[in-house]
Length: 205
Image (cartoon, rainbow, N blue to C red; front, side, top):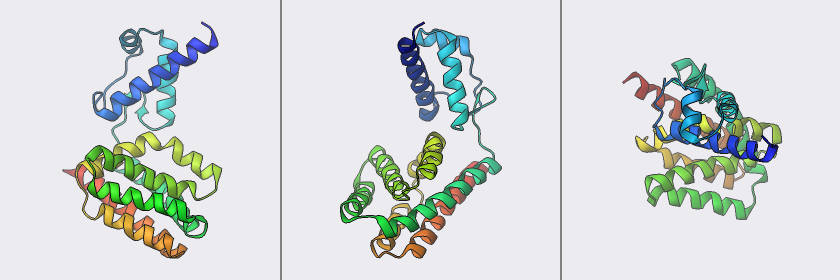
């Protein structure tokens, strides 16, 4: 198999499996069988195996099963986000320009008035813009590797309508606009802690 067709098969396999996990078609705890997935997609087992390995690195798969995060897993993931995104918000208060501030505010407006899917997209963009404002490629890469697992929790807070979610975004935006780095960092940390508490509460139910 030449490199290009393999890369294509690998990318298609990765997106196929990832999307099935994120949509809930492959429920948490499901065991992934390489042969079955390869047959479904009409590819060899090699790109499927590589896709599963990448999804394991991203946190969506653990020991060939769709991840079913424990309380500890959730706390560990959010601890990283609280540290990195909190610091990014502090940086954003220093570096963010007027044009980017307007895009950030547009995310809030869309999230308030849009459909669930539009809110999901705007929520992601809001956090992505702030992380990018850290101007730290290593931090951006760490968060980027976590995007798939972050999506699962973001979906939880949006679909289950966590109270004050968008209000908190607006408070973070106002702190960044006012160049108050300390407040922006503190608000982002509280915002993500509230996301964590909400997800933990739903798991216990």
